[in-house]
Image (cartoon, rainbow, N blue to C red; front, side, top):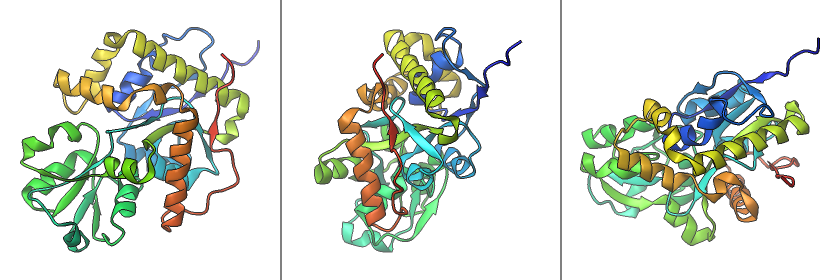
Length: 287
């Protein structure tokens, strides 16, 4: 009897965009040709970033900042990414702040290796008093005065006014104005050691899961609500609408250009190591 195909380890965040994307894949809705996956490990994105440094998972969501650190081990899939326009991290505080004063402030970031952290470094290189904390702890910390300001992501983009916070800078908007490309936030990567055939099969499975989610979005809602930090239906819908788009199905030339430019600027800023001469992303073949 031939041995069964391996069950790949998989990790992604509990945020609505990821649970929306992966619902069909993890619930066996893609048919017999879908690669086998073990039960997924759901964790906040910085935990997933840290796991990528140790190679814990075969297939993982990770920030593009972290991807720039582990490209020798992982290759980016063309499906499953979160990037776009009008969806970047926000720098918020309790009161309006002058940009010149930012350098002397303590600013919370949602993890050392998040895209938000690198984007803040690109926007304000003089800001060095950074405090890493879990993304859902940042708004309370800013509101309480534990930190002077914070970079918020995910559902926080929609709920920060409830904490009495003020928008200082939309970092994604700044990126779009300076670079002219969508802001790359996070993607799905697979271990290079799996081999190209397996990685392409995984990429096809993630793409099929995205397409099924788009075609029947309500099917995934119980799974999404089970893991969401914010249960308001309108917030969940806005979150998915903002972070899941055509780039999630296929990065395409513009998405790939955005990722490459983000990594290049990270290297130029001295935050990322020199980019290795490796393929950046697995491009889809004819389907």
